[in-house]
Structure formats: C-alpha cells, structure tokens
Image (cartoon, rainbow, N blue to C red; front, side, top):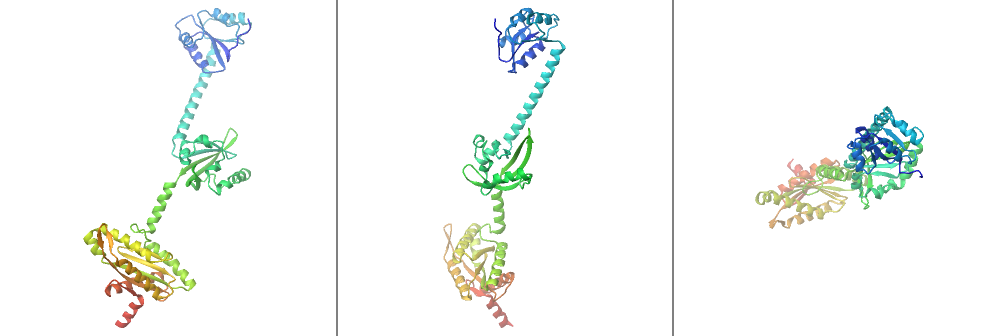
Length: 427
C-alpha cells in the first residue's frame, strides 16, 4: 500500500487524559501538524471525546492504532501513557525510533505551552496597542523611509477624509499643501543623506495640510523616527487645529475690535494713528483726528431701553463708515463716543466737509425695531501737523474741541484752533 499523506506532519497521540487532550488542542491550532489518531483505554477520556468531536479516529488499543498508522509517512508517536512497551511496538512497526514519551513529551508540552502563552500575551498586547491607536483622538500616520504611507488610523481618516485603503502605499505628500508637497521628496532625500531635519523631534509644529476634498487646513504635527526589523519608519502624530485657530483669531479680534459695532477699539485706533502720522510726516501730508460724541443718546437708552441703544450704536457705526474713504478709520472708544482718522486731507476745509457729511448722515431717524430714534452729534477736530505732531496730543485736542462743540449748542463741529482762540480771548 502506498504511503498515506496528510497536510502537516502526521502525529499519533497515545494517552488521552488531560495531558493528551491539551496536546491535541495545541496541535489542532498548528497547520504544520495533523493528528491522525488518538488512543486511550478509557473510552470517556477527555482527549477521546475531543477527538470524536473533531472526527479524528480513536482507538482503545495502542498496538492496533500503531498498525493503522504505519502507512503515514514519517508519523511521530507521542506516548503519554504509562506503558513502557509502546516504544518497542512502534519500533516493530515503523522500523525506527519515532516515539516521544514520558519526560520528553512533558518537556515538549511545557515548552509549547509557554510559547503559546507568550503568543497569547503578544497578541493581547498587539490588540491593546491597536485598540489604543484606533481610538486615540490624534491622527497617527506611519511612513516608510521612501515617504510611502503604511499606517493610517481612524482619527487620521476623520481628519483628512481618506479611508485607510485609499492612502496606504501612496506618498505622504498627498496630504501636504504647497510648497511642502513639491519639496517633500527632496526634503526626505536630504535627511537620509545628511541626517539633518527641521521636522523630526519637533513637538507641535504648525503646518498646513490638505483634506481629500482639497480644503487646506491648519494642522499640528509631531514627527519622530524609529527602526523596526532593520527598517526605518517615520511616525507622524497629527491634530486638526482649525477650531483652535478660529478661537485664537476670534480672541485676537475681540482684543482689537469693539464687540458691538465691530469697529476698531481705542488700542487699535492708536496703533493705526501712530503708523499714519509717521507716514504723513515722511510724505508731508495733513491728517485730521475727529472726536464724535452723540447728542441725545442717553434719552434713547432711558426711553427705549438698552437694546434700542445698542441697535442705534450699530446704525451709527454703519453710517460713519459710509461717510469716509477706505483709507480712513473710524473707531468706537466707549459708550457713545467715536473717533476718526482722515488721512491726507490736504486742507482744513476738507475735514470740515467730512464732518458736515457725518452730521447730515446722523440727522436721518434710525429705525429701532419700529420706533424712530433721533440723535445728533458734536464733533471736535485736531489737525496734524498744524495743532500737534504727537498722536496722543492730537486725540486730546480733538476731545477738547468736541467739548467746545457741545458747549456751542451741540450738533456741530469745532476745530482745536477755535479752542486756542477762545483761551486767548479769555486771557
């Protein structure tokens, strides 16, 4: 009869107690081994019952089992019984010593069991690591030394809009915006040649990245390098910081703009005024600072409420914007006070003309949720370089001229020069 062949190395187990049952379980998990029969004098032995469930032939007589398995090529016999004659029976049938018994089997079983436990522990650690990688909120991207993406966790999928199978094997530059995208390969070659990098080891480096839909967004990148199995890999930890950047932008805006009218506040206006006066000084231009205080605003607040007052201030801001050029500036400096900068006005008359346009714009009633609101304005004007060359002094002079306008009947404008004339007359 020709030799019988099975997938994996044929094995005969003699002795199907706890040890034999455990050995059978171990071999069933290994594709390199095929158990061809199990033997035990006890028909209810746990290994016999397991073999029956697995459709493995079972025997109660060892000699019969050995004879039945003689045609399996290179069959190995594992003797877990206490029968010392098994080795002679195996030798008589197979013609050589193919039996492992007693301490040999126990040592083998312990070694394999230890390896199995180690394998289970490694698989458990791998599963835990994979679970962590899959559930962290930051994107984790693994890149080969050639720049190809090899790992792309679910957070990275959410950030970039790509599924993992869409990017694995592709160059990581598809996630970059220009000019980094075009320069990436040369960056990588330079690092591999020189070992110098401005990216690796830098925590939280801010860069621009590109989503699948083409949207460019701000991203925080921490990149590192590792060697694994003799291969070089790069690990990128990425975080979408779009919301943080928007919040920072909003905070910066609130620090420089009035929350109600969205006009520049006093601090920003003074910065703009400093730069404008420096430019006017170099170009020998005139500039005007105008201080506006609303007339009748308190009455609106008292009679119609603060909501109506806020609505009125927004309306005033809109009308003031329309009376000046894009190169000029209007700011709200508090309450019902506004301050304006007119660049390169050429003559005093031009400043007076703009003031008249403002008063005319304010004279039309405001619609305050169905209620008409009527106000006026008192305007003071200081000129650079005629009245002063210092920005703070110009603002102070415009403020003084505004008070003179109020004292002169309101709803009109006065120049600081008129304040000086009045002082000289009093002297």
